[in-house]
Image 1: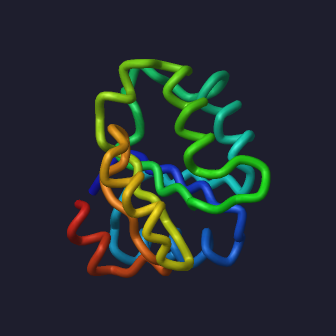
Image 2: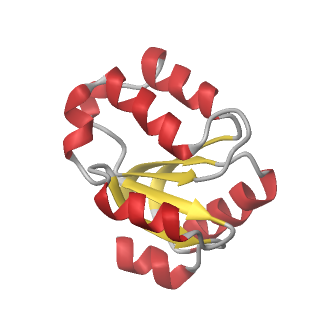
Image 3: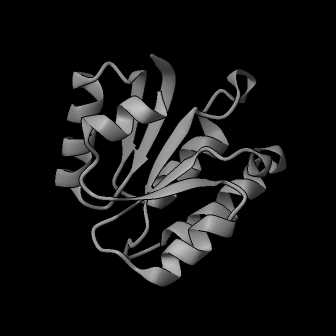
Length: 127
């Protein structure tokens, strides 16, 4: 079981499905969720305990209205530049977009791009 994971998705139903699957599969001790990416960035700047290291995974929706995944990652890496050396972001997408797939493959923090919904097989593979 992982220590902590973060879910960032503007769709509350997607968050609920992902979080439920994580709990059902004993994926992580702590699951923190955000519907607004800016609130997640604020959390990392002010509340997150960086002495414990970055979360094992951040499940990040690609398409969000105020800040998309790519903009989020640009801001996130500025909080602590050392985090950009670790592949720990799992991108989530409701649809397959070849451009996102190409970007995901070359981004230093992205582990993979998953089409929603997250299922138990995916979580078992990531443990």
